[in-house]
Length: 271
Ligand SMILES: Nc1ncnc2c1ncn2[C@@H]1O[C@H](COP(=O)(O)OP(=O)(O)OP(=O)(O)O)[C@@H](O)[C@H]1O
Ligand SMILES: [Mg+2]
Image 1 (tube, helix red, strand yellow):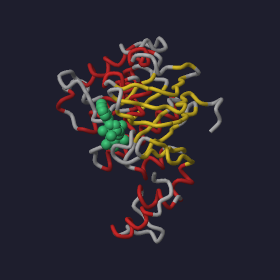
Image 2 (cartoon, helix red, strand yellow; image 1 turned 180 degrees about the vertical axis):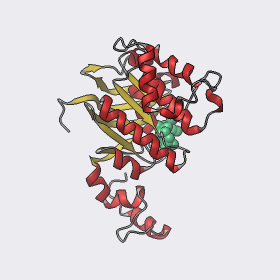
Image 3 (cartoon, helix red, strand yellow; image 1 turned 45 degrees about the horizontal axis):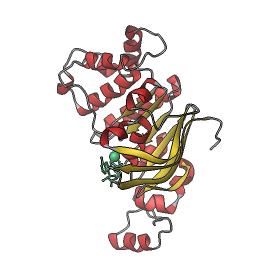
Image 4 (cartoon, helix red, strand yellow; image 1 turned 135 degrees about the vertical axis):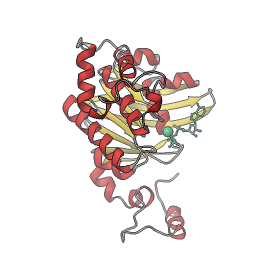
């Protein structure tokens, strides 16, 4: 991808937890201005760690970027605190939809407006924008967030980030545990947000088919290392991706466990 148009660049980063557990090794990722990039990989591959190293939340878990650098809009940010990184406009939607359960939906949204100055538009204008993207939240505005459904909580959390007028959003498995129709609804909104508000997105998804549909470019992590990155068009045709992540063999059906095991043995990019 062209370097000039990137809003975010991870240059060969290495990440450790507790000064001893090496989790990411030589990870380089770029997110183009206004683009959507997907980060794929199995459980424990290091996807959430990658997002946390960008948002600075890593430091809250005794994690650290020990080598390489992270540049956002041309400035190095990996040494900054999560608060300072949020002020610059990077927001991570963490796994598991953390709403403030004892606040109403609208109070949850208002919290977002205070996370960052933004461009000067009023809280009222920002709320109107969030309700325009998430019309479902209008009728729930006075309901305690602890009582709404998982999908509505996910919308509230994304809406809260939107209230801060983000320059980059990091989404960690927004589809997790949601019904297919809701997943479609949320992803339609996310795509629209990217298109209309020009918010670049780095998307972590276990649902690889969905991720490769939404993001034109994707990276694949395995055991803390990048093993592939390419356009989604190409990745969808890649036999390893088809087999391991999409569950499709070349004849278009799920392989038996024995066949997959055999395939794994000859998989070139597994270290
Ligand atoms: N706070 C932590 N302290 C120590 N090790 C951690 C910590 N958080 C994550 N790890 C380890 O780092 C590795 C990567 O974890 P991470 O959560 O980034 O993976 P992931 O790709 O997001 O997985 P999942 O799909 O399960 O969410 C795992 O081996 C995990 O055990
Ligand atoms: Mg994770």
